[in-house]
Length: 383
Image (cartoon, rainbow, N blue to C red; front, top):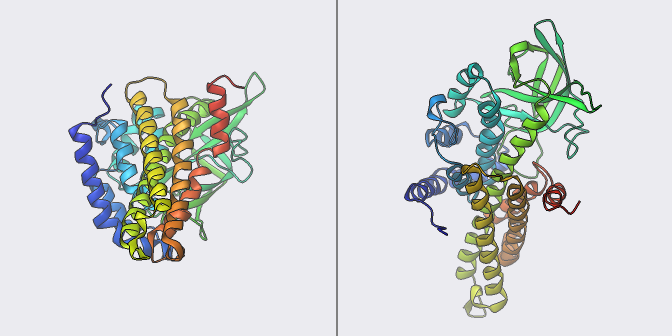
């Protein structure tokens, strides 16, 4: 068994890490405080090639494997969760559905600009009354002649209302299947479509420098050809999109845990109490040892899930496991990191305070930790 990464992977890691340290870290705290989405750093991430990493060159992508994309997301998250969220959602939830389920015309129309980072796309799944029960979508779409008429709303949609958001792909209810269940269908809605409105959400605890939106569809009309895949294929698309999205959320958890550990190790070596660095006290050394061990386990689990995906083997079970474990490892690491920082860990001038806030969404977004345990339980045959 070979656990080593290729030279290309290591070069990618170093280049993204250097970029995050030099370009994102100096502005992350200010952007978080202002709750400001940065178009400058967005462009810089795009210029680095962080969008469309797994998309073939034919459609403007980088043609890399999924491990490369996950490494890049991990390294951005090591410095800032908001920028990692922009990359993760932009790729897994925005570009992914268009690439995997779009027809040739749709791919050629939308993907090149998205892969260059000139535009962002969003996936409209969560609703005010449909979170974990995502299949209970209340947003409807009715075919009227040559147009779909959409009514409903979505909430907590990352990248849904930025100035460069080109559109969203809401999951809609288009009818009832023969088995009595809802027929769910994905439809492409371009920004500026009649009856469509996106409003930026403010006052967030976490990812304050990422764009989060509420979406409203009021007799929103889009052309019939904006259908993404076949009618009724939306639930299947949703599950596939979430499987990939879980890997990117896991990467954010892994990167955030690593970032918290790095901050903890540096601070505890510099902080002197009773005449010695606090890292030398056994109680603190054991904290750091536990963090390092769990981070290593999380990385192995996540990378294995990505390897399975790249080798076209079933990966959904491990994706759920990785999302669950990496999210909860970050939770443990940021908690211990704040403890090691003491009172300073509660101050905004120390980055660990932002890491502590940013972590919580990872246990909620793209399937809560409770939902991941349900998914895993089904895969192992427990329920």
